[in-house]
Length: 43
Image (cartoon, rainbow, N blue to C red; front, side, top):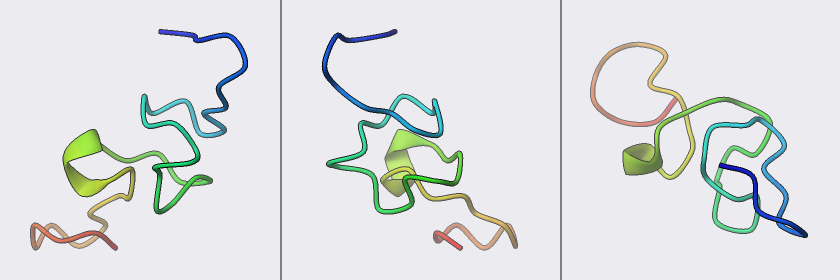
């Protein structure tokens, strides 16, 4: 979903102002950060 005037640089659905990793695609449940090692925590 695209909202006017709201940035989502990585297009993961988490707006940049709330995204802890605005340049990396990640789920909203992880506040926009990826779980790269599969341990259930971001990064």
